[in-house]
Image 1: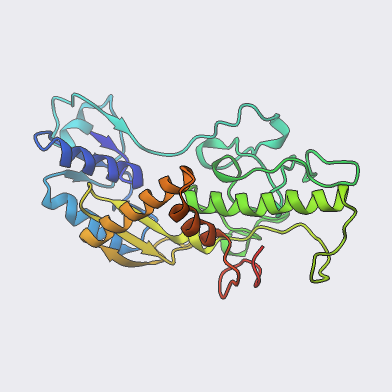
Image 2: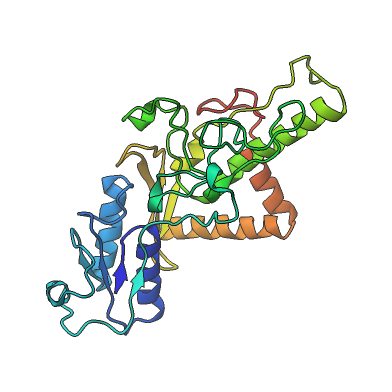
Length: 293
């Protein structure tokens, strides 16, 4: 039994089905469909894939392992040999002082607070660690941070926040890393080289983060030979477009994984591809600066 039909749950149950075809697989979710944040077309494609491959699906179903009626309702009266609970996220920022962690948020809070420059903040909206000139010294990027900035008077419509909630996936984390590293370099020039302008005469100022357009790209594996790819999603439920699916999308995912591994191994092809993904010279759309960072 796989509990949770989000990205992890769907990818895990389809991998199990492919490599261990004799297993009897069941997946459940509290929501009415799998892959809740994705557009309906992508969710429907993944749902049909699981149907074709004999994976039992039950939706609008609350996980209640101690209730015999729950097991009967998913046609498993004798329970299962193995359960995988793939729901929710949990912060692991125990190493940070309490005043720098959110009181609310996914998994009950505990995410590192940050300002628009990704500098760590405290709960009173003060930069947590600064130098003698007030420049931030510590930045929070990736999964550890709060993921969005609601502003002083949060609107119920997250689209009106300075930065709406950002998905905890790889692309936004790398984009945040680019912004934070650029800010460290700028502060170094301001503090230790006494520079105030760049080569083009533009004043040196730390960059602010934005909702990265790449945060709306989702590639969901359905075993090693199928997948679907969504582009253009944002913080609104069901947004985005299913642009690639099937075997072609599986090849796309393989290229992404291969090139990313090559980059981490300091290979020239991987570095060239992924450098320009996050160092786009000109931003024609999205929230980034027109001429990049």
